Image (cartoon, rainbow, N blue to C red; front, side, top):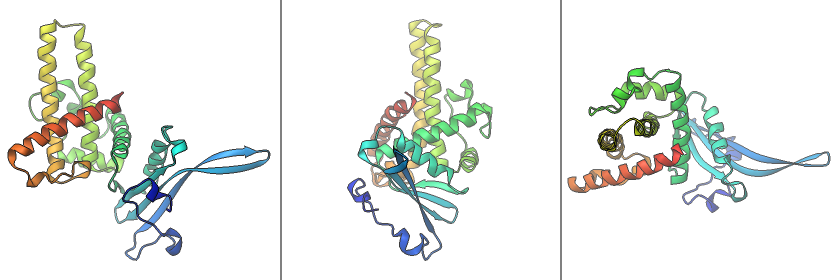
Length: 252
């Protein structure tokens, strides 16, 4: 924990050893460590790669701090540690405390992969919500709240994260559909179809973001509710454009 302040601006100490990791309110801590092994003759030595602190309380498990030391960054160890945290959630809903932008992207990438598997296996998410006629309709094509809750429960992630992961998946399907259409339609028809599908996608994305903004969730925490309507509209447009850029980087 003495390492954390060097890498996390708002890091705080966790004295796991003093209490056995158990807090007075019944919550408890776990720390997952990742080591690199070195063989020196017959001896095995270990170098710390990083660690994740987890707090369990009631039906929730919070990922509180995640540190990967500089020599080991950009090698997939962050994903490895977060997936390990997911594996020990003990059937609790997984939360992340005050994540940095890079960690938000990492979490979104993992949740997108999990939701994609459910869609491919036609599990939990009804097929009617994943077929092109519904995906690119002009009507609201976001997942209903009850489906978000059911998917979140099956994956132990929040309904808000399910909505984000589904929006990332939909963007991938949108871009695949446009690529397939390129060889089958005239330029004028392609432009009209692309514009229509992109407008439908962005409209749905804004609904997801608007819900998060109004509830003051995560990285979108921006005092949205105190803004004037015109300012809210501009901020929502900016958030949707930024989200599309981030989601495309996950799809690469």
